[in-house]
Length: 231
Image 1 (tube, rainbow, N blue to C red):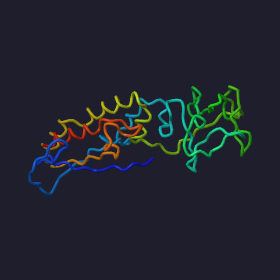
Image 2 (cartoon, rainbow, N blue to C red):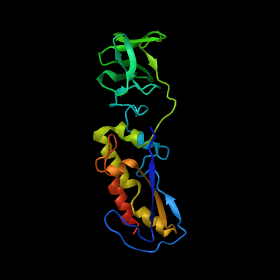
Image 3 (tube, rainbow, N blue to C red):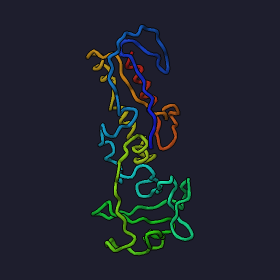
Image 4 (cartoon, rainbow, N blue to C red):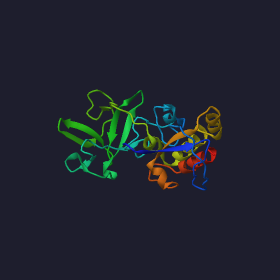
């Protein structure tokens, strides 16, 4: 899932208007700036360890919690239960389109999918998958055992907040905002001859402190701190 990021510039010598007050000064050009990426918009490639506390961190997009997931296929419809087996016709996931992923302890990419009716999915043929299996083996011949192949991993703001969930995500994100960039960093930047910073922010910051789920509030306050530190 792709999200646009708005880019803001803050002058460290002069003072741009903040969200609480404004001050008129002359802007000195040219600006010498540094990018403060991965602060108010998560960029997983810059610090992958931020995702280490997430259980089953390889599935972060269509997840309900650490064990239950929605499965969306190429036509952007969700896999769910049907009268004649498993189908993909719904554009919005419901209880019927929710599956528990059960992993093999010593091979986490080897899984079984439990449907909302309490049974496991099994392959009946190349064109038919049903949700009516009650076995419990992990044998290669077991029709309910699947192998997960990870083609690409997304590590953005949506994935990290959705992965940690509504209880833990606010704590994790607040701790990151408070420590990743501080007032001392702004002082260091200014003392070393730079006159501006470039801060990417997500579109959801406009709805802070109550952004749409799974995003969490708090980044706007961190942004306001940046205005103050830049004075």
